Image (tube, rainbow, N blue to C red; front, side, top):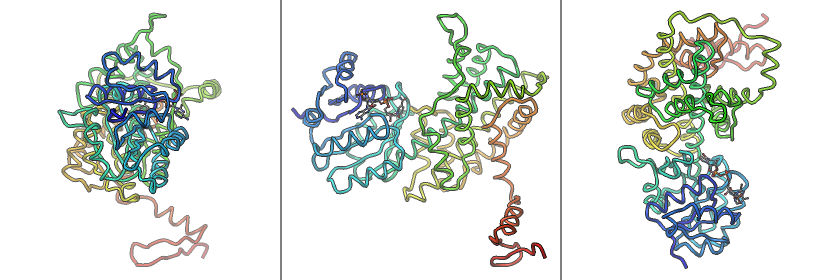
Length: 470
Ligand code: NBP
């Protein structure tokens, strides 16, 4: 019987929690998972919401359970599984039905998928969802891409299930075709940079200041009451104070220092390079995760090369105060770069990405939610076409306040061998970006010398060559 208002395919962590969230908001939801045992487990865990859910054994049953025009959210493993699921769905669906891919798709796959759906009579939406398990269940940040005319058909349910920032839903249509998945990718790229810088600061407190996890946790908890207030800082404090019940020692000391990655950070860096926009903090974070994974090689290198000598910090209290501001400065670089990449992509793909809206829907629900994003949304609202976040009045002033501490921490870290690849990239980014007279005149001279590429002169129009070898 066609009485469900929406369907969800894929009942792993994200799909299951999203289906429960939709059900809790009063919608009847048809659910399907490739392996039916998972659907049965899901139904057992649904509690009071079970009457709002229609479990389906086959895709035919699933499609028939939804009232046309059917919105169907696919929340399965990104990549091939999404294509397989879409191919299986297409012949069963009718004109005007909507397929929503809500996984972490590469936006280039979304462009292709929308193109493939063009003549089917169906509508395709590529939707980024952030917030992990907790967000999916109680309110994620939702970034929608696709035909603008298709958004009103799903806007009600998406706004209902999304996170709210002071009553404003963190869900929005951001642009045509791949816009939603692109913005989600850059969200994750910024998340990589944010997490890496936090880890660098943790490393300095652990190795240079010889602080115990609980003491470091206390510092992060305190920072969470200031300008760094954010979900990532708050969970960092939680992770650092957790005790392993088996050994009664800090959990953090028992976790292998090798980070995983699923691809969105790398895609952000690749797309930034493709568009010629520097995203050095994101690149540094991706590289740091790759180096972290080479644990055996690093241990061997430490045996061969040893560690640089390190001195004691004269004034630990002042040093920790500077760490807070250095982290804030690093964050400015990461967000400025992420927004600059989105701005370039917006022009290249003709999306018209609304920067203030993006900052607004990241203020709650998602992993990078923070007080900082409210300030970014205000800065972009005042000046939506600004070339770079760092030259807005609010952020140039803020950078002025934390630029010195960033330099202090990075230079001290370099002198004492503490790895700070992302924070150091931020200093270099600011210094290169703010310098009107750079050094590329020499690069142009070299290029002309070996490849006759020519150069522009400051004092004459046209292309010129140098007097090399004369
Ligand atoms: P996973 O990414 O772990 O995928 C598991 C789901 O995909 C199961 O339902 C599985 O069905 C289904 N599946 C697979 Br695998 N191959 C399939 C195929 N060929 N046809 C149909 N279904 C198939 O699930 P997840 O962690 O819930 O993530 C879902 C999406 O959301 C991903 O794109 C992920 O990147 C994204 N995301 C995840 C998070 C997070 O915190 N986990 C956050 C934000 C976004 P089965 O039960 O039959 O194996």
